[in-house]
Image (cartoon, rainbow, N blue to C red; front, side, top):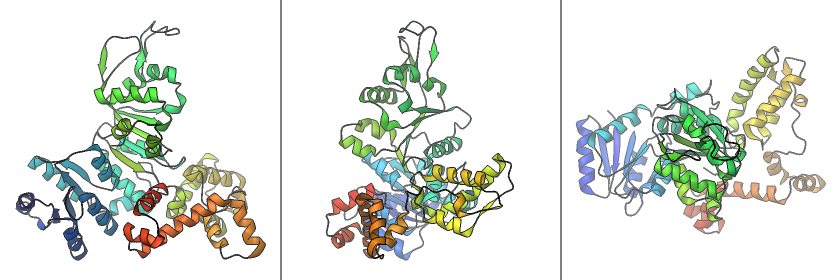
Length: 456
């Protein structure tokens, strides 16, 4: 028996769901708005939340944030009579388990609830992540959230946008979604958008017929046709030119395409997973990326945190790479000295996981003993870790000045601003409104900075 909280401003909907769920043997609580729901969540041990989106006093999206702040792994199902792509993106980005529209079928919501409750236990992720979740190494809370999201969205056909810095493992996540999907036995086709010239884009993606242009000496099958009934991974999607964006949007809308030079259309059934290291919302504002294409691609957005924001994973990743390169170089398995590990934990890894792998590979190759010392890591001397920058505020005289100037104004100010925002959020019990008052800036400015710095 599960304890389920039903939140909806319509009494008839609350009563309907309450009767339905209690018939299934569940215990229920009801609330008419988000404010009432928060009180219940604080006092009761809730297993699942079902919430309307548009409600007075506090809407469902704000309630979703509060639930996830209390316990990220409480599944939240969002329901609405006013379906919109924007709400769907915000709900899934905020960690909603699912998003369904009214009116819904009874069997449909019963199935979603059953699946949501069966997947609540975090222990499965913690156990699997030590050896890798679908090929991804990590045991930090940030990565456990991503594993949870992958598990929930993989069986669906929803398009996914993975965004984050270079080297964070965006393609690994795309592969994990494909491996856990219903089309895992079909093709996974990676497509590098920045590697295809604009003039060849149509031909590469959709193919061409013989004689359609100079050099087309035979028929060619496009990458989308290869990926049909499977998954197409569009890497560096932010690099597409406006003309190419328009052509891709048309294919996503119509689910069909024509080969270059052909008059016949071909139906296509491909799941699109995209990745970018750009902020596409900023690109939309700057008129560099189509908003309608963004909402087609980002039905479910996934942010890959940089390694500096999940340092708990560094020992786990280090051990994985030590084992990997011991096999590659046919060496005896090595380990890091305590000092070497401390240096890695303090380093900020601008190149993220990819850089850590390169550092360990170099360390295994250069070290002649079973224990890799700090000097074998060969960290870039120009890179100082952020922890040392923060410590430098307490240094005095020439040492302090040298360290600050070596980093430059932008890095030091950015780091200090992020830390101050985090401090204000903690002091304000994670209320953005109160945090903005503490910082003496507008709520809108704070919200922008939180998104800019990916502060969770």
